[in-house]
Length: 339
Ligand code: NAI
Image (cartoon, rainbow, N blue to C red; front, side, top):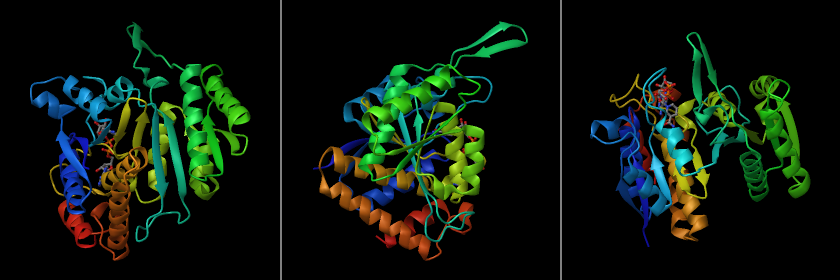
């Protein structure tokens, strides 16, 4: 049985990488059929809302989407479609696995960690005010409910995946109430529900220093929204860049799979983008369907695609961002040839 999946191509490089990934999945015989919906600038260009109700409803109905990046104007204009989609569907857990790939040179060769980011509150609550000209505020929100559920998600993930340690990054020395609550909730969830998983907390500045010095000492990293956003890109830099790190936004309202990277306007429309991060996100999507809908065909497709891109990279076939010469389409074709 084929599963209906919403495809949101997105902006910038989004349509190019989405098309490449869809092509690979179709050629791999993944049991999916696509329902395309727009969001972001692409939706505005079609005369609709930046996040059309039809897109949200489609994800709610099907429960699963593959999403390209959406552009957000800097310092003005509409609020982030990405943040809005995650909040509307209450996709509270962003999970970003970061690991070395054979054939991709990077600073470290022993990285295998997972960033778990709280996706619905923190400084991304979007509550900003101009108190008086020249004075503005941005409200950081933390609730016991959201801090507890993301901590529970992270520890449960660690236990299910056989990971040994959860490290919380925080700044509770300065933000004693908000980050203090985040830290306390994580500690409580650990002590009461997951004492068998190691727990560690680090002030984020020192944590980042240790991360770039020795990423192998980390396993699952848990943090609030803004820190998770920043640290995800830092971790991508440890293994070759934004072209090789996938992600998923998970919650009770559905599952939206998207790469960590943005719409990369500097290279959009030039067949330069690496589709691998979105392809890896699609592999996560297939494994998610394999698990939640008990479909072995999804798992088999995921395995076939993963083995194919591993073979392609090992053969030295790469896009430019990771030291190769292939364009977006040629890389996708290479993966298809190695299926
Ligand atoms: P970005 O991730 O789009 O680009 C940063 C750098 O990495 C650029 O030099 C870009 O060319 C390169 N890069 C990114 N993805 C690549 C890929 N797949 N292959 C090769 N090179 C790649 O970050 P930036 O420039 O900060 O943001 C651009 C736009 O994307 C903004 O409007 C931002 O709001 C949006 N954005 C959207 C996200 C989403 O939809 N989930 C996530 C992050 C940013």
